[in-house]
Length: 502
Image (cartoon, rainbow, N blue to C red):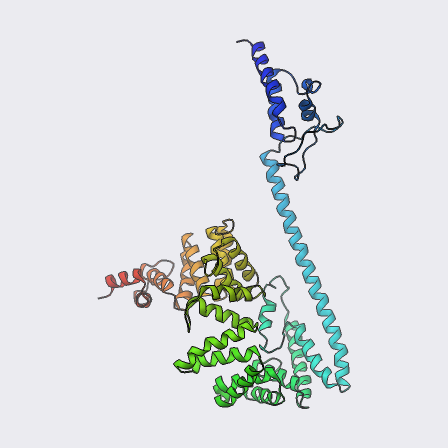
């Protein structure tokens, strides 16, 4: 077959296929161009008699929104530019790198914007504090309290019924903030000392709010030395004036704090008052008292009061009740209740609730299993610095459960969790790096988890000690850890102990 015959065949194929080639898909354009090249002609030769040929020649490059969408054919003005060729692999890689740089730059801009907003907020707080302080110096008792609270707030300390739990939460995720100098730390300490002095002036004039806040400062050592006895006395004074938060903490101090003596009956009287007016913290505190100090019959009522507090919207109670129902603590297992109450807490942004609800979704506890949604809640918790959330999100990343598999990022989240003291974070991080051959680092984290009572970590650390893996050989210490694991039912440890021990 000669060259002319081959060209005629390609021309015939082109004539047959051209009406079916979409002018809006680049790969078809390339295909048509190749046919034309082999046929010894060009696509323009067919545009005179073929509408499809005209589209092939004159269509502009499709936009991102247009690609993949079915469209009706229509004529395009002949002055339009021809389709661009398909990008090469190198060009695509460059585009991906540029996109990554763009995302990182956007994240940096967002972080800088956030830091600027925080600086502006701090400046406003300090300006407001200076104004309020002037009023306090003129004798306004209310201004004494406001000034103290402004100082605390400027240092991310938010005093309230739950003491200052918000202090740690507010500081999580702020690793991008500049390190404080010794001068900054000294100035902050001086500000707190001064704030407490202003609180004391108002407290000594029988202001219940000031007495309550001063009780917190004395209990935690904020701007003063820790003095539980004096703190309890200020709680008592505020409680006698009807301050609800003071009643709660005075009752708890009477019931639980051995440092100031116990008077359970008086404490329970205050808790009963809080329960009677529907104060959820009262129900929750009473449930804790029944669980820790009640007899068997009273312990069975602990769940009832915990549920009452949860139904009144108290987040710690919702988490506790969900945990009870998930694992059957002080009652029967009810996974539907566990999912319901953990979701209440999770949707309010609580990191513990997000971990519990993520676990329900991941395991299908009381709800349809949904790994993608579970990962969403784990990440929300992890982003707030919760060690359990970090560990669970890390595990999902490493396994590719509900999210694209990313071993390196998963290990990073395990380490974040481990370094906050999470037992399972320590175990999972040690397992991950031992797979990479980093036995010395793995041994360190196995020991941390083993000392918290994890049987698997006890076995692994004992085995490391016995076989001199990552640590100096110590058969006496190895036997100790292996026996601890065996006593918890670890089968591998039991087998090894049977071999090693006489």
